[in-house]
Amino acid sequence: MDGVVDVVVGYSGGSDPYPTFENKKGHVETVRVIFDPTVIDYDEILENFLEQGGLPSCTRGNYQPAILVHSEAQRVKAEAILRMLRHARIANVLPIIAGAGDFYIAEAHHQKYLRKLSRTMPYDVSWM
Image (cartoon, rainbow, N blue to C red; front, side):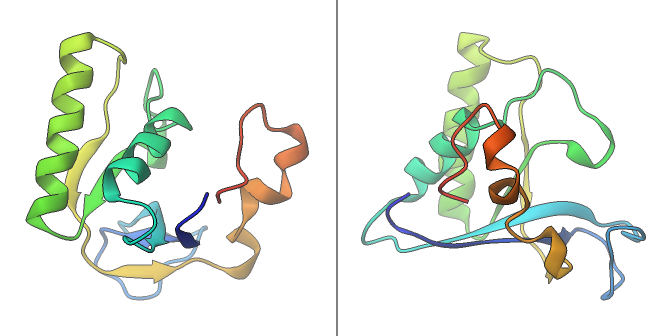
């Protein structure tokens, strides 16, 4: 996706600074999307997230969809999009919105995981 500089898998939300996949210590799995706002805007990032699987029909453990925001402007935009989705009743489960907090990069073998599996995925993961 033009404008997406990098996508990094990691953990956020817990208190321990050394989470791992096997021991998340209160963290949840997260993805940090680094983008160039002169090429792509935050709204497009949100729309792509929601189109590419951010709207599951149920939650499973660490897989509660969430939008972790870094600013009040991002929170306002995310809330507006979710209000529209709720009104349109497009999904059973909508992402939660929370502050981004600290981010801890996941182990190397978790990076670009979907790209490694892209031959078996039914949707476009080329932007990841």
